[in-house]
Length: 313
View 1 (cartoon, rainbow, N blue to C red):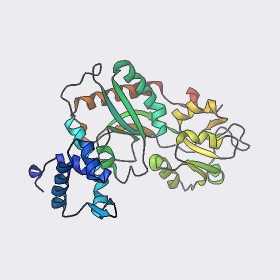
View 2 (view 1 turned 60 degrees about the vertical axis):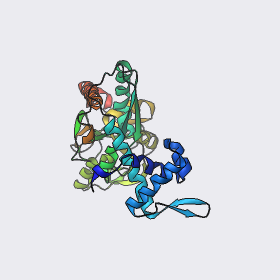
View 3 (view 1 turned 180 degrees about the vertical axis):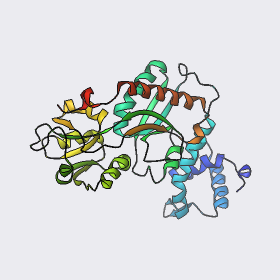
View 4 (view 1 turned 120 degrees about the vertical axis):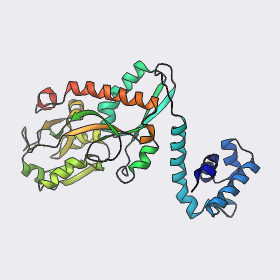
C-alpha cells in the first residue's frame, strides 16, 4: 500500500458515510455537497472493491466489510487527529484543549481528583475527560491507546508501551465492622472459606494471580465493575473484598467496614500512565505526563501504610 497515493480526506468521508449510512447526511456532516460525497463514495468503493453501503429497501446498510471498517475508521480518524494536532510548544496557562484519560474508578478517585485540582489551578483552559477502563484493555491495548491521551493502569497488566510511574499502593482486605469471625488479620483459611466480592475486570490480575499461586480459589458471591461498590457489598455481611489501601482509606469512614491485613506478603501495586508512542514528542502531552508525574510524586510522599489509617480499627 502506497500511502503517498492516498487522499487522507477520504478517511473523513469514510467515517461519515459508515456512521451516517446516508450520502446526504454524511456530506452535510463534513461540509461536502451531495455530488461531492457521492464521488468520494465511488472512490472508496473502487479502493476497497466493495460497495460498503448496500441499499436495502428504502435505506442503506453496511456490508460485511463496511461493518469491519466502522470501528477501524473511527480509530484511524482519532489517530490522525491527534497526530496533526501535535504541537512543538505548549503554554498550559493559555491553551484550550481536552485530554482524554482511560481509568478505573479507583484511579480517578485516588489520583484523578488531585490531577484535576492541579490542572484547574495551573491550566484553567485545559479539560480532563475520564472514561472507564474497558474489559478489552488487555486484548487490544494498541487500539485503545491510539484513541486516547493515556491509560491509568498498574504495572503487570499490560506491557510494551511507554509509561510514566505515578505512585505506589498495596492490597488490603475489607471486612464488615461487625464481622463475627475476622480479627485484625485474615487467615488463609478465611480466604478460602468466606464469600468474596470481586472487581470483575482484569485490572487487579497480578493480585488475583498471586492468590492462585498460593492455592487460594476465591468463592465469589458478588462481582461488580466498580471498585467503590466493594465496601457497600461487604458492609453487614460475612463477605470479604480485596482492595487498594489508598481507596480503602478514603471509603472506610463512609461504610461500616474495616481493613484487615492479608495473611501473606501481597504483591505491591505501582500505578502508571501509559500512552501511545505517537504522543511521545508532542509538547502538550509532555506537559500532561510531567504534571501527572508531579502529582503522583506528591501522593507517594503521603504514603499508604498500616499506620496511616488503613490498618485495623
